[in-house]
Image 1 (cartoon, rainbow, N blue to C red):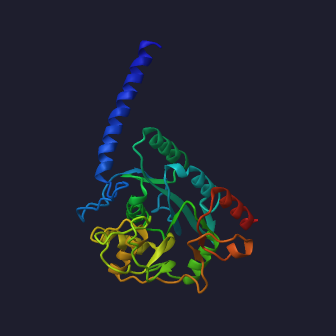
Image 2 (cartoon, helix red, strand yellow; image 1 turned 90 degrees about the horizontal axis):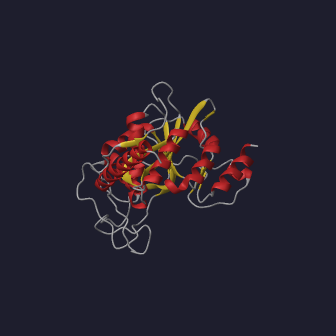
Image 3 (tube, rainbow, N blue to C red; image 1 turned 120 degrees about the vertical axis):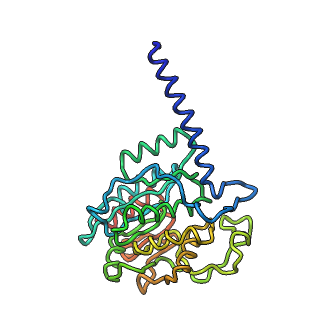
Length: 311
């Protein structure tokens, strides 16, 4: 190896080290819920919890060409196969009933430099990733969802509707668009699988355990299952505006419900028949033509369901 190459290697190594240290220190500032087996830290302050820097942004100009519907999919580094399946199926940018639909993935940050480099490369290739500098962990899911809400508020409030969903969810974007157009509402609207009388789970062994310190009440306000809900863009902006002063809770769908309660925005059914399914359902073409979303779908099933639905 010649001297010039050796100098380059030393330089790159130094840059990587500085980058790692800076990222790690910055991430710690935005770790509201650090994943620990013993306990989960609660935020000590109400302001600034959703601050942080956008690291990756999608390639879109909502001022020039606003989409009708933006689908925001919470994801993480290891979900690459799921993201690829969604890109090839319901998440591909398309026109439905002359309405433009776009899909973007919401990711937090990893302190693993190789993984972060992979995310950057994926973002540059597909231009469909939104990322901020908080640690990507289940207990920061509220930060991840609010990152999407913030992006809509600041960069794409010209859109009409937003859907928040997950990478293991199948979305029938054709039927969803049809129902939204049939509703003929573009303001003050929030829908999904309604959960009207849910209680906090106090069992510490549960994934959804919430302490009385985190939420002292006995019943949650009405909210929609986080597997998939749809809201008009004006509601997204209103949620963003009250989010800093709303009681923080690590369950993102409950947190959104708390914001809606503060705003006095009521949940609505999208259709008289159930169209949002927060659990897995058996596939058939006739059935899936009349659903908006279903949960627990593998990447291979995304491809299979979609191909059968559109042929």
